[in-house]
Length: 128
Image 1 (tube, helix red, strand yellow):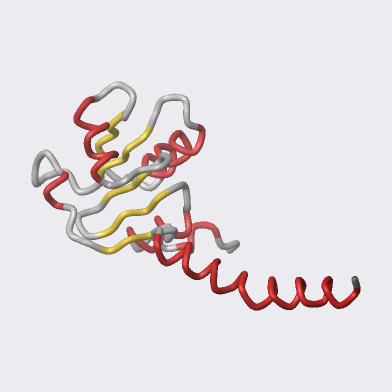
Image 2 (tube, one colour):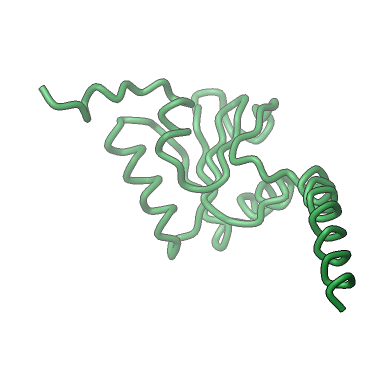
């Protein structure tokens, strides 16, 4: 019985990383993705799209982030707009918010990644 337990433990220890890597390579689990997304924008003067819902707290936090950093954006509610829902499906969306610039996507709420995307200085958060 002890030998069977050891064999099972060793087998799991060796095979789980392989299974884990396979699963994660098949799906894009990255929070950010590089690409060309200009075709998703309705006009050239809009630089940021936000795919969101009204009831999503992370979407609200993203909208507040944009407003506090004076970032002009177009909010597209995937539950109210057919065009937004099509964009969400095209991007294989599984959750909101999705922040889209012309060459990058951020999936989920991440102030750190948005700071990088928009090159926002963290100096305003530092103490004098």
